[in-house]
Image (cartoon, rainbow, N blue to C red; front, top):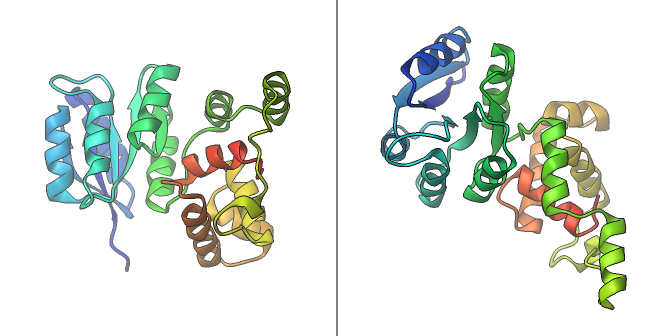
Length: 231
């Protein structure tokens, strides 16, 4: 039997933490190992408890969730994936969270099944941005090919889109195929079924893609892939 996924809950509202704890506690493969009500508490507990996944509120006393995420991600001893959970569907929160190192973004009005699925996805190394959120990220960080070409034409500069061969280590055809599906928010299991390969093989491909792109996680890989014209 595999060890359960260890989850740290961070929110300044005790009732919400209790609700999350109840939802996650019903799942045999998930275990809530700690709770924090402030940013400093979250940073301290992340270092001592070493959770696999952290659900992080944004607005908290003493230190907000964005700064707490940044400090957690800067600590090389902590390997937890951070999911920002907020009541506010605001672009500044989304982009600041991603810049700070968060691997996902979830609204507090999401259903219990979405919370459970998000925790499992992050623990598995999958992304957890909904397709509509992914589109907002790409509009912000990765202009379309037409926009790149138009801006290059106006400025007289070459397009920023680069072929895979221009990477220090080019992506293989299979890796480009996997990256395309990652960019469409497919999970490792879905990619494995689509390409008729094992899920472990997909994880290997994703790890190699992240390494070649110099990306922190799947979300950053998608943004870089669009910037480089790889998808």
